[in-house]
Length: 206
Image (cartoon, rainbow, N blue to C red):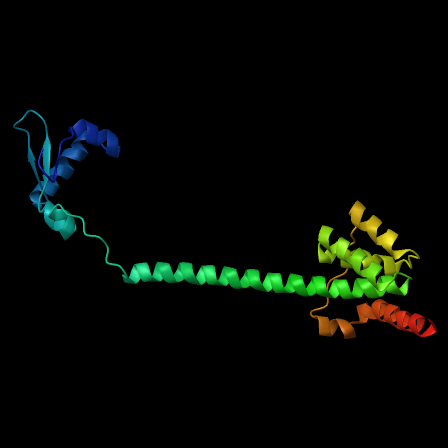
């Protein structure tokens, strides 16, 4: 067999194409009439030669060599650019998420200390308790537990918040204000502001 030649029986082609044998014969005859193929049965089997086979193939493949794609081709550059942009977007998203997480944790740390100090904890105690909560649970869950404690008027906030966190009894109804500055003016933050006022009053009395 030479390059551009193949050998299949008419019956095999009929089975493969789901055609009748006469349809395969007519199709091959038409291709031969159009000088697209040549057939030979001199060897006792049907040999089909595709005319101008090399012309239809890639020029590098016709000479038996495979050219390496040039570095920096348009397609390659587009793929590289797409991958780079995607990685850059992912990195930026991760950084934004990390910044938001750090900001939320800092805010909850501050609010948690104010909350606990208002109920009698020292600053060092309040800082240690809030820090332990944030080391073990996400800031959102700590924030939610504190809001629940405020809503029910818990007289022992550390115990109440710890129980909510330990039992996973989050309401998921409380969301962080858009930013720490907004948090100061957020209506849902009125409980914290009242606690701060109470803390200030306690300090003045002391």
